[in-house]
Length: 376
Ligand code: SAH
Ligand code: SF4
Image (cartoon, rainbow, N blue to C red; front, side, top):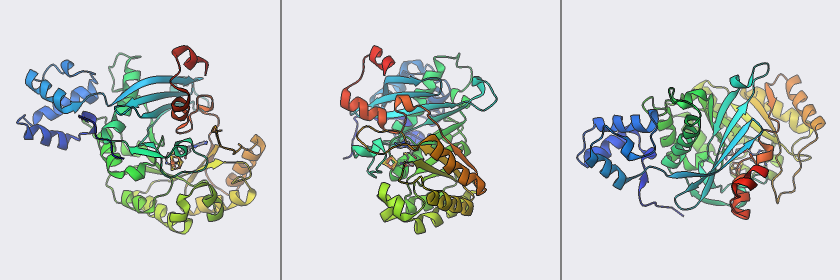
């Protein structure tokens, strides 16, 4: 299903496409930079605040573009580490954007690393067996503007706490494209959105601080390897043999490890970047000694960092998170095999931070009242 909104989001325009659209309607090219400045530097939330534009141009903008393609309907905070924003789109679909604050060991909270996690689709077609986003299937791709606007929603939240003197995204260390959906299945819109996020006239966020996470779409990984912008890549591996991976990730039948591993190797060679392998630990599925040893061999071969993620319970799914002892043992095997590895513990577990979980709950139970939202 393709959703065609009445007006397209202005946030989906690159500076080049905006300039072309203006020219086509008889407006001067230099207006594009002014509009970008209002959107991404001053971050105003209405056309009327764009005071150096003529009234006629503001009217044209209003008639042509949607300024608010995403609207926050719920904010959830988990302790001091995770904020989750539930956003409603023009067709009523719900998506999630997450802010993760990971304290750095030995430093105060103010110096913690801040990461924004964005969604790229409503639902997901890939049906991984542990994932809430895949449970209800794929509904539609997000437009480039809906992806960029998630970043602007985060900016708006940060701006409301500060005096706006600085570009608020500058306080973030990373953007990870690891929310709902498979980003590489929405390739063109993703690339357009990241071009705008990266553009110094736009959000000015360096490509090296943007990580795209994929379940392993081989042709698109090879395509991304050819892009001039050097994004980082995270591969959701979750199984170190075809046998185990296939059980939990149907995509492995289409692109098995013997095709996937060479593709990510090509990617890291092209960009000279360290790859991350994501590995969700699920009890008695992929947390065995054999899997740890095979994972270590893959990571060494790819010079990749391994990020272990203890499985987050998803309502309606039977998998279990391994005990801390089993998690530690798995990590130890990687480390003793000279692999750089970390374990991501508990971040946002209490606010359903694994991708798609909050949306799933709200679609099932309805939007909680503010009092309920505080309690849950
Ligand atoms: N589709 C892409 C990006 C979004 S899903 C991909 O698969 O890489 C990305 C991440 O969501 C997974 O790598 C994992 O980190 C997280 N995730 C999904 N379900 C989870 C669960 N039940 N427990 C913990 N993490 C989960
Ligand atoms: Fe889709 Fe990623 Fe979830 Fe798999 S893990 S169902 S690819 S969002």
